[in-house]
Image (cartoon, rainbow, N blue to C red; front, side):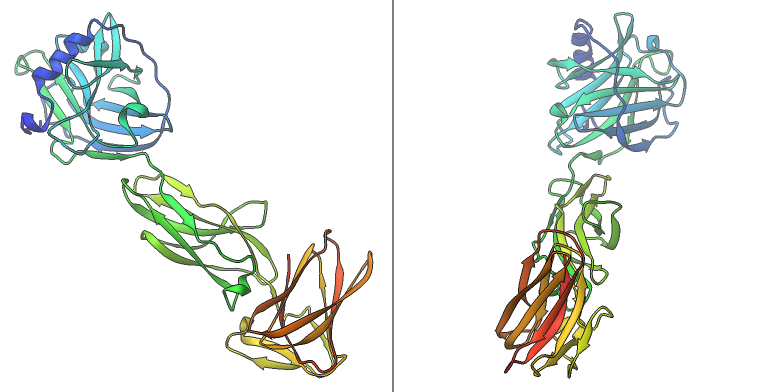
Length: 396
């Protein structure tokens, strides 16, 4: 049984005044099912017939459900003669003043639920439901509680000695009250280029994001996830804890496209996913699909994709590869020069010259939208008086 001072809880006299008022208000019942449950257990510590065993809270978008369970069975008529259950709700984290009191009581021949300002002001009828011989629940609109509040459960019972002057029980027995967080975290994924080679030298790509939970219970954990564009499932690529501005990573597969998102959970299980961003991982110049002809030289370069490139200065040297999607992007650099790109497919053959002008490493020197997803053979042929560095191709 709680020994907390009356200044730390709504006084019994105020509560009884509120109940007296409520007995004359037309009250209604039933209640919905909710999810996301937290339970606080309480010992068998009061001679009350409605000694608390546990109090629970759960919520959905528009309502919270508080459930009270006792050690002993009781009937609605047990809640007579100023006997009742109550949920005290503190919206401003000030335990000397509770803004809302939600009651479960017996009036008008049946179990009732009501919300007051913990004084004489009746706010509204609340749905209430007796779930078993020991358990009842009351449903409160989120519009009344707000998205974050502190709460406790209590029982007040008047009966045979030693409870003629009311036996009261609180859960939790002492401060602090129980914090209830209905707010999902805020998760924002940083903008990044579509091609991974624009900001990463390998298929392991850094993903910057922020995860915060202002006014809530705090970030519990986060995950960086990927999926094929337009399909499921999501695959977790990285995970961790902490909040604020963070960097995760995604180890991906060469030559594929991905949707990327970040998901974060707070300490009360609320979850939010960031916006989805598209990421394309190019094929490297050393991939088995590349067929070189001529005097190409393989180089090792720290800034290059996979730290390697192929280069040649001999006119008519060429590299051939196959694509299947409707957009291709050629990765090159460092260097200058020009190369003739020939595209062969069932639609025919088209050609265009790509000119480089002193580009740095891992530069997207050319992108072309082809309109349809069909098999195409791409040939890059070095032009006279040019040195061409090839670092990869994105097929997306």
